Length: 514
Image 1 (cartoon, rainbow, N blue to C red):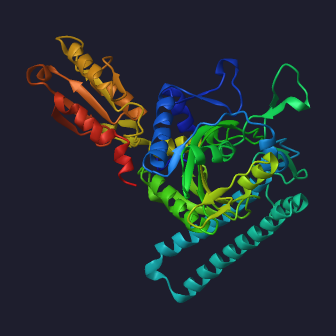
Image 2 (cartoon, one colour):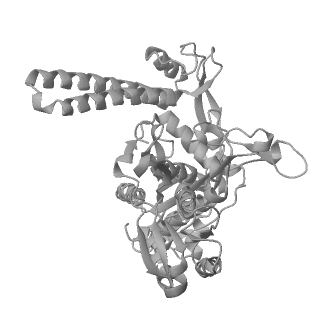
Image 3 (spheres, helix red, strand yellow):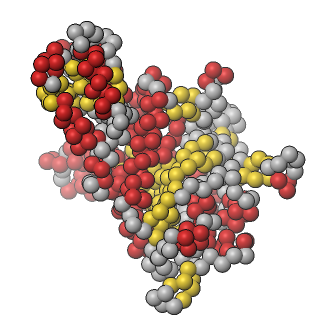
C-alpha cells in the first residue's frame, strides 16, 4: 500500500469494509442516511473486542476504577449545568460558490498542518544531503524552517485569541488573510462565520412542548458526574478513584465526513478520574502516558501516534491534549485527555442543590474533587486499527493477497477450521474441532473452494490462524495450523489447539504489555 495515494487507500478501506461485512451504510436500501453507519457481522465482533480490551485495561486491572452504564436520556437541566445548552457549538462557514459548509477551525488547522509538512520536507531534504551539507546550506535550511515555524506560531496565537474572545469576525478574517480556498470550488468566496449548536433534541410524553424537551446526550461524561456520589458512597470509594463507561452519544454534525471518523451517532469510551485538588496535574501527566501506552500495545506502530496540546481550552479545563493518530487523511484526534478541574461537579451541585463533596478522613475536610478525563471514540479507534492493518502484499509468482494484520486479540475470528476435502471423514473431524473450540473462541468453519482461496478469505477479514484437517489428522490426531502474518505452517496436536489459541489471541496477551 506504500505507493498508493492516501485518498485512494481510504477508498479501498471503505470498499473493504462493505465487501467483507465490517461496515454498511445505514438504511442503504433507502439510499442511506448521511453520516450514519451500521456495523456488519465482522465489524460488530471487531468493535466488541476493542471495547472489551479498553474495559479490561481500565476497569478490570485497576482496583480503584469501576464501571457504570448511564442512560442516554438525562434530565434537561444536566445539559444546562454542563454548559452544552449555551456553549456546545461549532464555528461554521460556507463557500458561496460550492455551497459547501466547513468548520472554520478545521480549515485553519489544516492550513497549519500544510505548513508543518513543509517543515518536515525541509528536514527530510537536509537529511538526504547530509554528507554534502555545508554551513551555507545549513543556515539556509534553518532560516526556512524558522520562517515556517514563526508563521505557525503567529497563526496559532491569533487563532487562539479569536476563539477565546468568541470573535467570529476575526476567525473569518484569519481565513481570508491566509487565502484559504474551498477544496471544491477553489474560491475564497466565504460567508460570515456563525456558531451552531450540535445537540439533538426530542420530547417526552404525549404532548410536544418546551417543558417536555430533552436531549440525546452529546457525550457520556455527564452520566458519570451525576452518578459520582452514588458510586462513591455505595462503592465506599476513596480518592483517587475512577468511573468508566462506554456508550452511544449523538451530535448533529453539519460537516460530517471521512467515513466513520465523524458521525452523528457514535460510541465513546470515557473514564473520569476523581482526585484531590492540587494533584490533578500529576494525574493528568500519568494518564497521558498510560493512554498512549495502551494505544502502543496494539502494535500498529509508534510513529502513527503523537500528542497535540489544545490551543483553546474548553470552558471546564485547565489542561488538555489529544493523542492523534495518522489516519489515511492525516494526523487527527483519536483520544482526549483533559484536566476538567472541579467544574462539572460544582455546576451540578449548584443546579441540583445537592452537595457533591468528598469527605477526606485523612485531613478531616470536605471538598469537591477535581477530575482528569480520558475520552476515546470507539468508532475512530476502530478506523485506526483497521486502516493500520489493511495491507496488499506481493507473493511469489506475481500473485498478491489482501491481508488484515489485526492484533490477534482483536480479530473477529480467532481461527478458521478447514477440512482439506469434503469426504473421507475430514468434514466430521473438522466440525468436531470447531465445536470444541467455539465455547472459548470465535471460530469459523469453511469447506468451500480450494484451501488457498479459503486462506485468502480469512486473510482479508484478519483471522490470525487457519487450521486444516487432512488425512494425516485421522491417523495421528494432528492438524496444520497456518499463521496469517507469516503464512508459515506448523503441525500441531489437536489437543494443543486450545492452549495455542489462548496464548496467541487472548486479550490478556495485550494487557500484560501495559
